[in-house]
Structures are given as structure tokens and as C-alpha cells.
Image (cartoon, rainbow, N blue to C red; front, side, top):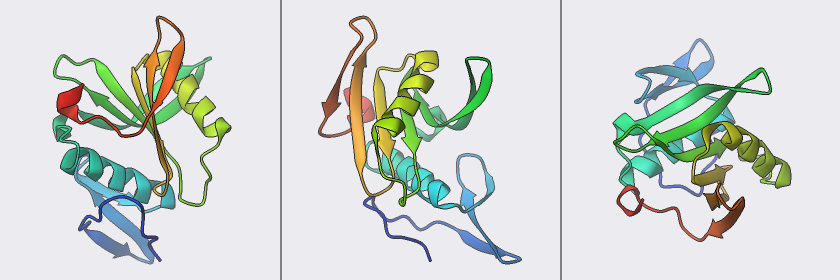
Length: 150
């Protein structure tokens, strides 16, 4: 049922709640309905914490934002110790191909956040961009920088 992802495995606490599979979200401290996108989001968070040493306390999930007067949600936003946003992650279900539209969505969200580092993942493919808002340019990165490298 749960698709293997191109991210390190993690021993999530899964529960069958009357036929509805839930996963315990360690950051939000509650059970979350397990959708394919949530499966990717949770794995990516654990990748950030375990492999890239991003502090748990600086990661926010499903934060709200307003874009052109409409309420939207960002999947993952990471802050530095000064409270500045340093990484925006857009997660998609594994069945959703990463396309220009996916990047456009993340870029629109980033018009609000003004984050210098952007990641897009469907759990199978991951893309990372470094963004210069001053020059209005971006470049793709081979690897996501660790927290210490930022």
C-alpha cells in the first residue's frame, strides 16, 4: 500500500483508525491522515532532520499564506535561528510528475515568503533551487545544502 520513496526509510508510527490509515506526525504531535502527499512530506521532513541536520524546532509544516487574496498552504518551511525563512519545500504525491507547473506553484508561494532555497519533491524525484531575489535569477543545485552550510 505504501509506496517506497527515493528518500531514507523511517520507522513511522502508523495506525489503522477505523479503516483510515494515519501517521503520527512528530512535529505537530498528532495523528495525520496518511495521503500519498503526506507520505512524501513526512519522509522529506525526516530527511531534513536526519541527513541534513535541520533542527526539528525550526521546521513548520503546512503554514498558511495569502497569495492574491487567497489562502494557500506551504508544505514545509524551515527557519534559521534568527527566525528568517531559509527553505521552502513543495511536496507532491509520487504519482504527480514534477513539471513546470509544480515549479510555478512553488515560485508563486515564494513571492510571499522570499526564501533563497526552494525544494520540490514527489518522493521519487527531488529538485533544489537557489534563488536570488535581487537579481531575479535561480540556479538548480545537485544537492540540498545541510543546515550548517546555509
